[in-house]
Figure 1 (tube, rainbow, N blue to C red):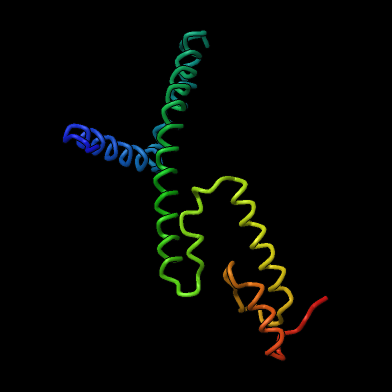
Figure 2: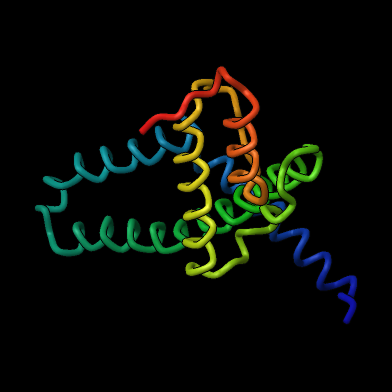
Amino acid sequence: MTKSKTDTKKNNFFEKFANAATKFTGSSVAFIAATAIVIIWAVTGPLFNYSETWQLVINTGTTIITFLMVFLIQKAQNKDGKAIQLKLNELIAAQQGASNRMVDIEDLSEKELDQLHKFYVTIATLAKKEADIHCSHSIDVAKELNEMKLKTNKHFKHHK
């Protein structure tokens, strides 16, 4: 299923708008403007006798802005997260000794991630047995490498 030109333009517009809004809302200018609005609102309190309408103005405004910002922040985090995952995947794929099993693990279930975590705990335990802190392992060969190193290299020491 291909996207029409109209859909692509809408997505492009939203992407550009979201990027611009994210940049602006994270800027010093936006913070200063928001602070100024709150100060102006507070200063006008006596003018409006601290009425319910005066309170409702700030409550409604902040609620609407917060509601919209939740979605904008989530979009920015999703995009940043995806970019980081792609960069990490590239590093894993480019590294000769790295396990390609690690590429795209963000799509695994929580249970599968817990299992992978257990592998790294095992690797850390094995690494503690070595005297050299610069040794590293892939998931697939950690135990075999450790046993081989311990047998063939005298500078690796067993810690009990």
